Image (cartoon, rainbow, N blue to C red; front, side, top):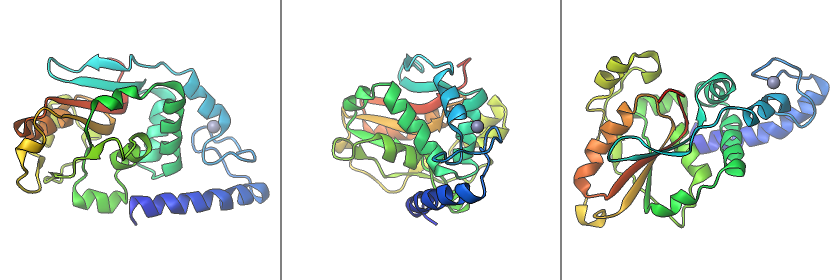
Length: 233
Ligand SMILES: [Zn+2]
């Protein structure tokens, strides 16, 4: 099922779920408490905890070349929310995180970019997961009439999930993972800015690999936005 269809299905389920909750109360996916009326998947108390969570400084230099925009420290309740979204496929939970960030932070920095790029998944992984979380985040964040999607990057290598690997293994695992689907006309991108969008940046290895492929196209700025980042980064 495509991400979009899955999203629609969840929306339909949402209404059905509130009805079901009325008869058979279901449990919060995070704390296990019985959900009240109008609560879907996660209770209001758990959502509220996001409010008290430690936030990152939104904009900072990732290295001498690129800027990283990120909001949440990847710990405690944030981990639970992101895992429910990414690994358990609870798309409304992902949408809730983005909605929450949009209430709290300005996304004006998007105006600096002419292109955005959701980090692509390998075809096989996309089939397994049913959706690309970076694509969904982009859909919730980017205003499509203002900024254009760069759709020529593909993930060529089906690697093991980066989450299970150490720093050095991650660098090795991701090496050579990305390439261009076809030759593109470099002149279009000269002096333009592109923002890569992902759910989490851990070591930055994925981003650096993507930048290697995009740099020769002449982009002026290649930056990244993620929902979350480990605190120590
Ligand atoms: Zn809860």
